[in-house]
Each structure stands twice: as C-alpha cells, then as structure tokens.
Picture (spheres, rainbow, N blue to C red):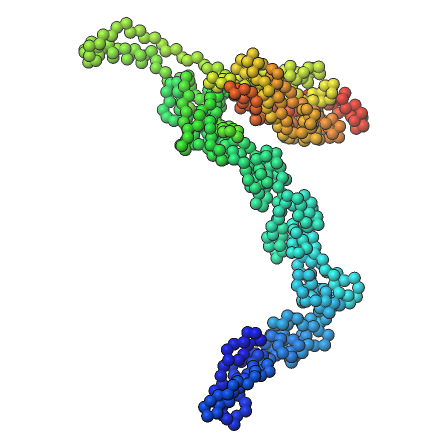
Length: 604
C-alpha cells in the first residue's frame, strides 16, 4: 500500500506472481511516493500468513519539478545550466541559499545573517515572514531594516506614520505622526478613539475617529463635543433630538412652510402643512405665527397662536379667524414636543382674504327679498323696515407679542448715541419688549432679549457689553409676584470674535460660553456680561475693525404649574458688536499697552 505514514491507503494485491519469481513491481506511483509491501505464499491453494511489512520505499524524485524531495538540496523548477542558485541536479550552488520548497527561491547568501548590500535589501538570518525581512531578503512593507556593521545581520523595525499598519507592532497608522486625531504619534490608539484599515496602494492605512472632537468620522452617528448630552458615545442620538454639523438640537424637524387651503373668506384663512418628523417623540403642538404682508410679500410682525397636533394623520390644518377682508397674510410655524421646538419654517406664500360684502350687494339682496315677498314666492312672510348700511372694515388687530425687535435704523441710532456720549449706558437706549402672551387660561411668561443688537463700550471695569434679558408676564404685577424661581439658559457663539481672545463670557465669573439666568424673588431683568480681553485686543489693533458674537436664549424652566414659560420666538438672539474706533496714534505700539482703559474710553 502507498501513502505517508499514518495516512496510508488500503492494501492493494498484486496477483499472479509465479512460484519461481522472487520480485514484484508496483506501478502507477507519483513522484517520490511512499510504499510499503508484505507477501504471503500459496501451497495447495491455501495461503500462508502475511509477512511483516517491508521497510519504507519511495519512487524516484524528479529534479526540476519545483518540489524539493528526497536527497535534493533545492528545486527551483528548472534544470538550467546558469548559476541561479540551484543546479541541474538540484544541488545548491556554492555561496547560495535556497528556501521555499515549492519551488525554492535562491539567493546568493540570503538568510545567512550577513547583509550583502550588492544583492540583498536585508538579511536577518531567517526565512520567517512578518519580521521585516522576507525569505528573499527583501524589506517587507511597513518596515525599515538597517545593519550597523559590514556582513552583519539586519535589524528591522516598523515605520510609524508611513500609512501602513503593521500587525503585532502597531495599533494604528494613519499616515502621520500627529496626535489628537485618534492615532497617536507612536501609532497607539488615543483615548475614546477607534480605527479601521483600508487598503490604499498596497498599504493598510488606518482611518480613525475620536468621539468628542466635533467631527463626524467612521461609524459615528453624531459628535457635538458633548455639548448637548444628546449624543451618547457618538453612537446614538437621544429621542427628540437631531444632530448634524457638529451640533445637536432639541425638537422635531423643521416643518415645511404652511400652504393656503382654498377658498378663503373675508375673515378666515385655512392653513395646512405636512406632519414633520419628531425625531423619536410625537409632535404635541405647533406655534403658528401670522401677520399681514407688506410690499413685496414680506410678513410683518404678527400674532402667535398655539395649535394642538392632530394625531393619526400625515398633515395638519388650522383656520385663522377675525382677519381683515381683502388683505394679504403670510404665516410661519414651528413644531414642538417635550424635548423642545424646531426652528421656524420658511414663510408661506401670500394668501389674501376675500372681499367683504358691499352696500350695493346688500341693496340687491333687499330688493330680491321684497319682490319675493310681494309675489308670494317665499310664502306668507312679511318683510319691512329693511335698512342698508355700509359694512365697516374690521379694525386692525394689534400684535400681542411685541417682542421689542429694533429696526436697523433704531440700532444705528443707539450706536450713535452711545458713541457720542461716553457716560451713556447702553441699556438706557434699549426699549423693553411689550406685553407677553396669554395661552388660554394659563398665564404665560416670555423670556426675551432687551435689544436686537448691542454695542460694547468702556466703563470703569473695562470694555463690557451688557445684554439685558427680560421676563415679562401678561400682567406686570403678576410677573413680579408669580414668576419666581424661573430660569433661562443662554449660549454665546463666535461670529468673527473669539472667546478667550477678543472677549470673555463672564456672567457669574465662570468664563464659559454657556450659562443660566435666574429670575428669583420678583426679579424680572438680569444681565449677561461679555467682557473684552483688552490686552489681546491691543495685540491685534486694526483701526475700524468690527468683531461680533451672538447671545441666544433657550430652554426656560421653573414657575408654578399654571405658568407657561417660553422664549420669545422672534427676540431670542442678539448680536454684540465690538468696534475699535480709536484714532491711530503715530507713537510706538507700547503706548497702547500702557493705557488700555483710557485708550478705549470712547469705543463703541
């Protein structure tokens, strides 16, 4: 039978050997195939027992078949006469070494631990792969091999930052030695990071993501630097929130703009809009703001009404009444649920109410009634004393959400007055927003900015912008007595100014970009102070340069159960302008740094 030891095949009989024959031939063997034999003899037709197994026998090797077998020192798949390391009889040429076995790869001195710079890239004295130097004495991808002496073995090490991650020695390799991008300068993983490899030009380049850097990478579904608390481990978004662009926002998706349902009447318009996605929470109500349109179709400041959400439907409808006839209106809306409200939609197209009945129309109706009464076509009805009067136009409904928003002309006037009078207070020139809303029988308090724009100015403590925040109730006395322990969050964002460089958001002295204002014990007005970093401003003096930032209110809280605290939808963000209007001095720059307070005394 044939086969390697331990995996031999079945015995195969060679029958018909003559009694005077002492040998037998086993045919059909492969190259260098193992065979063992046993024999028995027949006498009078009866067999003896089998003999013990013979010693191992093999068929001949074939030099040049690419498989080193038997006594072959090498077999590179050919029997050429040239000096390629393995001669025609499968013996290794002097000074060469061969590895591989199927077939052999031969090198002049490769793997002898002595680097031959004329023929080898490296020689670490072994045929192992994955250690930097291959069995062909070539440097493997992602490695660097050196030799410190003549005819010495090569020492190989991985190359961090070459864009090829070497398993076993590098946790990552993103093609650079920079930190803070998920893969550290020594090719180890940074905290809260994860990396995956993609093959680029034959190299396994790492692509890394860092949760909390504000950049959406890899498998992250959100990353807002942890600002909102709604992005859990950059892997999931809290229900009711949406994330994108490095920020997460509470509330449903912004609804489509409302559209008019035809026809209108002289005093009503019905609006409809698709139900927006609540981001995991069902929309509970909408705020619909409508107003008369001015020239060009622009919507004037108008009323806000709360519309309960209609469940189980893909669209919402709402009819606004008590409108003026023959008048154009436009509307915007936003959707709200327990997590917050969406942004306002774009404005609707203009919708015009119908024309009111005129006296001429009424006169015609009166005439028809009297004629019908006289000829009996409307039965036994007596008609008399009909008086025709002109229908008066409905009075214009005043907005009940006077949010105190200033026009550009008013803002410019304020800036001019502050700039002209160094002793003036910015707050003296800002008007307080008017009466707030009443929602049904629930008393409603509105947090709003005290102005639409604020210019910073110098005072005794340095250059400061004071942004006023007002909590107004539907009744001033009720506001003082009822709206206690009520708070509103605020957030400051850079526009062209930079926090810590041009200004410091310093309410409560915490130097952060967010905070909370509390209206307690009848307090209905508080301030957010934004202090300029005057030394930094002196390091960057540019005459006439303006820098700006925004202050935004959000998330009101507190109050009693019958209170409805909201943030004014149209007066919740203000812009702070920082203007350096000093007259440039011909003296050296040191004069600026030695008198920072006085040099800003007239800045606005």
